[in-house]
Amino acid sequence: MRFKRRARDTDAELNITAFLNLMVVLIPFLLLNAVFAQVSILQLNLPSSEDAPPSDPDENKKPLVLEVLIYKDRYEVADRQTGAVLSIVENSQDGGHDREGLRAYLGRVKEQFPDINDVTILCEDDTDYELLIYTMDAVRYRVEMINGMPIKKELFPEIGIGSAPPDSRSGGGA
Image 1 (cartoon, helix red, strand yellow):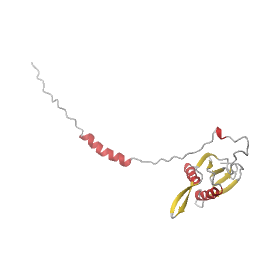
Image 2 (cartoon, rainbow, N blue to C red; image 1 turned 90 degrees about the vertical axis):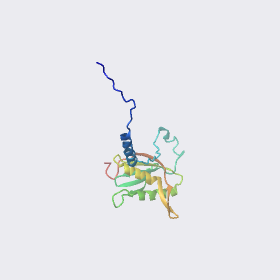
Image 3 (cartoon, rainbow, N blue to C red; image 1 turned 30 degrees about the horizontal axis):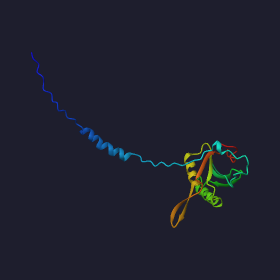
Image 4 (cartoon, rainbow, N blue to C red; image 1 turned 90 degrees about the horizontal axis):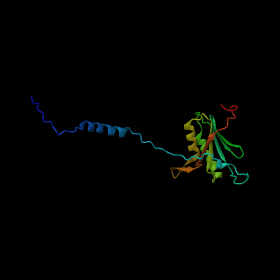
């Protein structure tokens, strides 16, 4: 008995219709649902060993070393060199921190000391991240209306961050 061989069809077709249908649906879906996030970077100055105080205290002494302390119920603006509290900005009536009040006070400080560009923000360990970022924005710039247009003016763009000392009003911290 002889076996007959069938003639095989050597012309194979590649059916990509299903794949193209998938791509037609998938590509617009991915493009429409993609998140185009805007990332902004803020340069922070962290203390280093090179920032040690000079051997002569009168040498390179700045007229003012600003610190903004964030507590639960207020902002405190202080001078690190003297340890004096320059201003206390209480929370607003709605219970939130008064960033505009802080910005207005720092604007007056900037008018007195236009050469100072750095500030240190000190916050408690349980301070909200958003509050810290909003405070950083409040000390970096102020908005002035010039010819009916809002213009951002620089206040203290060089920001350092750290931990605040315990709150003296609440009996030594929370």
